[in-house]
Picture 1 (cartoon, helix red, strand yellow):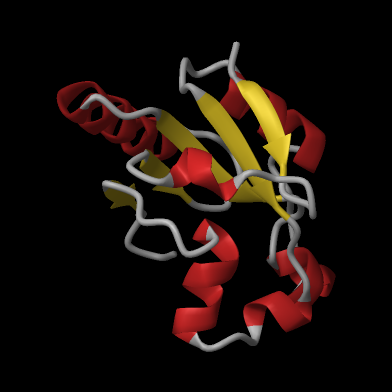
Picture 2: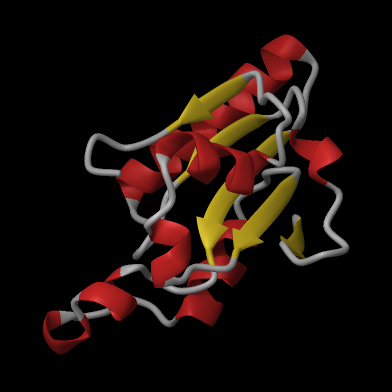
Length: 126
């Protein structure tokens, strides 16, 4: 079972440097999500880094489309399921309207703390 890290002021972004990250909401942790996570695990193994499932504390649609949101899993269940998928770590970013409104560069800095992962695997709709 992977350790879950909630990003706050004490989070060490250094762990993401050289990591292979599957990055997404993972709203149902379905086969497509598992494919991305397996890709992160594979590239981590090939490059000697760690594999990370990087996600948000809430589904962004909860902030932007709460009226039409049909959740497949609670946020807690989604994060717990990610931790069961044999990644080295699950990193949970706090999501807010302000977080989403950042420039692309600031968004990446907020996600990775200025570190550079070796690989980022994302779905086509992220």
